[in-house]
Length: 263
Ligand code: PEP
Ligand code: MN
Image 1: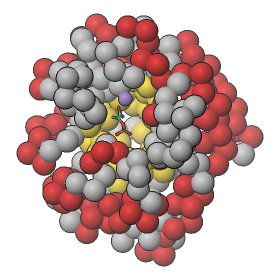
Image 2: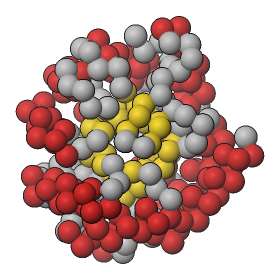
Image 3: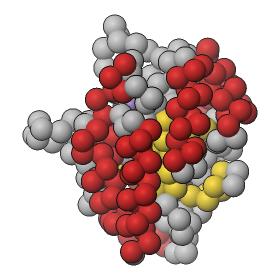
Image 4: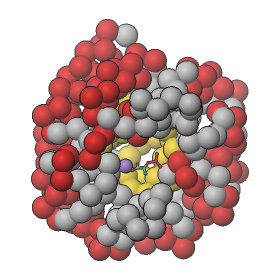
């Protein structure tokens, strides 16, 4: 179902006014995690002003350590609902467990399945049985084939609105948090009809490398970007190091649009 032959013309996914997989690159931006009403609202207005089409922010966070901030949970989801209503921005947020899906889907316009859950098959099946689009991140040690088969699970259970997201893979390289595999963009475009986004934030782990890799992702043919932005990155509760300031994000948007126009 995910194979290019199944739908040679490509899949476009509409989220409100936003078209994913269309001509224009889709820009999703926001903090790693919901921290407070003011943090989320200020960031949302700033990214909207800079040209973002959708807001990202996690209420449920899959943290490596159980002692790290786990996200605000349901309280964070309520803040997302408020900020969505106030700004009009559609929302992408992560779900970590099948039983969370019904309530998260009441707020989220797109459900994110994170890298760590890419092969959580009960989660994939549950995401397949509900109608909201799913942003499926590539697992940090997943081959492209395993990633496409994870998308196939969601589709096999009835949901064809799957958006793939390359977010970097684990390699021997230590200078960056992950190795952003931009090869995956043209490979997936050839093998599948599904839209592909790139996450240059988790892909590099360092704000200094996000803009060049964002430009490169669009040049490689990605359908858009999901980027972490924080009003005060040095104070972020998670992933501050890789978060852009609103000013840097505005510059990223200008540069990425220039690349897209040149294609
Ligand atoms: C995130 O988007 O904040 C996140 C946890 O991403 P990933 O699943 O790619 O690590
Ligand atoms: Mn993050």
